[in-house]
Length: 76
Image (tube, rainbow, N blue to C red; front, side, top):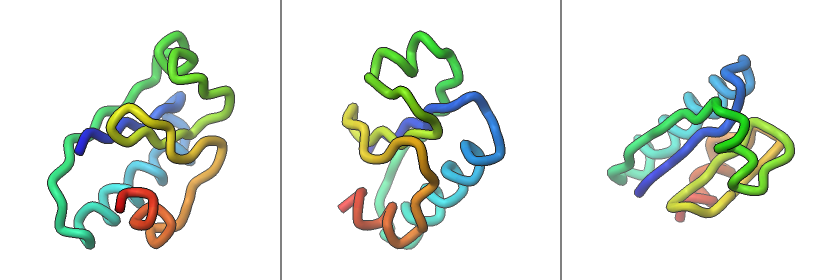
């Protein structure tokens, strides 16, 4: 699974990364993580609000930091 966290590096972006790492750990799946801070790359996903969670090239959440449980549901 390929996971990208899109955002400027703000505290919300960091929270999203931590929660996503926790969700992956709890699910017991393998995933690679990438943080993307470049605005042109972020806009290429069609994201207008950050932080955003992208899983295997698809935007799963944008403009909010979902709970660990919500992230687990998005990853399934």
